Every structure is written in C-alpha cells, then in structure tokens.
Length: 115
Length: 113
Image 1: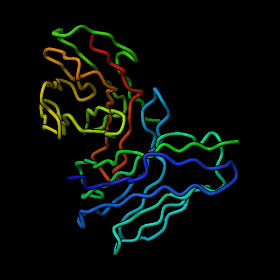
Image 2 (image 1 turned 90 degrees about the vertical axis):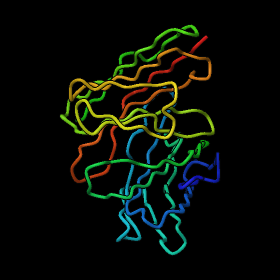
Image 3 (image 1 turned 120 degrees about the vertical axis):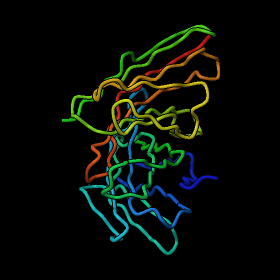
Image 4 (image 1 turned 45 degrees about the vertical axis):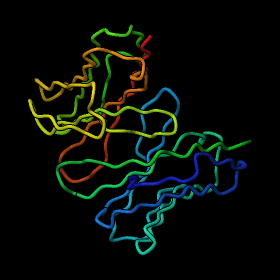
C-alpha cells in the first residue's frame, strides 16, 4: 500500500506560468516532507522541505504547502522555467531530526515546461 | 559540499553474473542507502545501513546483498544478475543528525542482458 502518492505522472506548463505538483500521504505519523528534483541520468537533488509544525515554506521560486487535515502537500513553482523540466519526487519521514533518515518516496511527477 | 560517488555511470552485464556496485561518500555520514528507480515505480529502497558492518533490508531486498566494511563505502551486490534487475541504481547518504535530507549519487544505469 502506497503511503506517499503522486497521482499525476506528468504535468505540462507554459514558461512563466505556475506549476503545481501535488502529493498525498496516508500515514498521519509523517512529520517531515521533502521534494526532490531529478534530471535524466542524474541522482535526485534536494529542493525544499517542510516540517509538520508549519503549513508553508518558501525558497525563491519554490513554495511548499502542507495541509495536515487533508494529508496533502503541494509544490508551487512560480514562474516556471524550461530548466525546471524534470521529475519531481515527494518524500516523507516519520523521524524528523532523528538519526535514521529513512524516507518514503512517491512515484514522481514529470514536469515539462514549454518555452 | 557533500560528494557521493558511484563506481560506474553505465554498466552492462550478462544474466547470471555477479555484479558489484560501489558507493563512496566523503562527508562522514552515518547512514547510507541503496535504491532502484524504475519508470512509474519511483524510488524503491533495497538496503540501508546505519553503521559500519550493519545492514537493514528495505522494501525490495530479494536478489541483492550489501556490504559496509568502512564508513565511507557501501556496496550493493547482485549475486546472480537477472534481466529484471535492469534499472537505475541510486546510492544516498544521510548525516544521522538533524536534517532528514538525503544526498544522492549520480546513479548507475545497469543493463542485464
């Protein structure tokens, strides 16, 4: 049973517009959430994170929103750029600040930003 | 900057061969992980290690084993490679303290013929 779900395998957006990537989770014990970006033939790179005590975290063009009651988080990219085209993975953890570091990943959403 | 290196970017092996994939990190991180990434399946955890000589099974350990003789090195072993092990293999590290960010290596694209 998938604990972290990214229901949209792909998303296409025009350059300059907003990209919204969604992620749902089922485990209410998750207390930390992360987004990773992955280009083909490269390893994922960390993008942005949010702990369960917050509902929003912003870093430049990237903002993550967390709705705990709905068990839903989203990544907003504004404005979208062609270089943002990649696969985005949502991940969750149950031991924020702990020593184990295990993450549960979603299946990813492939974002295409068209010029 | 954290540096995680993997021994090969691309590898082609034959069915039945024993395959070694190596991962080396230079940041003294406690925890190391091996994943495989397949289209439509995301990242699936194969094995992880919290300390030297310690290992834990992930979600899909069948057909794999691991070795961690030194803190900086975590090896993934395919005892007898099969075609369904054709995949992108990703190594990751974690500090073991504070942040839960994992740092990934560049990946090894393994093809088993």
